[in-house]
Image (cartoon, rainbow, N blue to C red; front, top):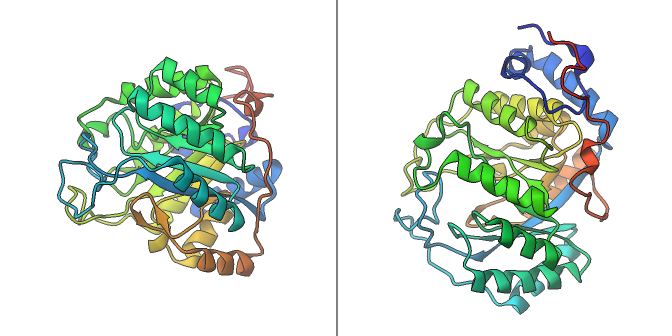
Length: 345
């Protein structure tokens, strides 16, 4: 289909799946040009938001996510680690702040957290916030009450990825449903916490699945404030070890479409950066990515170290974003067009 270029850059939640497919079908140079143009209207093109992610509880997860080395169902050689002490987490957050991070993300391998563990995580959130860092957590599924408790503790962001399209979902995970994920996102949003939600590319999905995943994100009542786009990190012992790698151009294409669909969101280069060349990352930044995870490790898999990132930022003339107050969940929706205000292509 032909894409109506005049609509690009408007914050909308009424995208059709055909429109999203039309963006994917654009010639690569045109797609990246439009994405960069929209990016410049909403952000400083030479700044990136820098986050650090820490695994605060590792392994022994009962879920069967085919990509995950933390599942108890797979033999990946990963050693189980209990929930970390609050003081240790604070020390790691302080080090992340000194290295330049403005957001500290705490990840725990839960299907859903028990209330006794949630109370400890809430202590971590309060302590990390006192350091002047934005806080983020990813703890699995949440009830509405748990989401409210995290909000009351001061949590700024909650990460809960869709991973892939609804149609491809059961090829990757069978222990929870796609709707379970949407329910957690609704609970987080209703509690007033900013949403961090994206997906994983290179799991054997097709372009139609990537389009459908981004369509789901872009048609949520409010766009996620942060959209992490992950490249599969293959881990021996998981079902997806040995999967055919995704064409780097297709990964960049997905970044560009995410930028066009969600112009006010931070689009984050997440897992898989250690396998990306500097040139591929540069194309991602050109296509509208403006957030990265910073540090040597993402939960249990590798990540470019700080020195490599600093060198790349220097070569590209990129500066880390300064710390700022986390936006309220409704902030990015101001000016959203009502359904139908933008003519269809």
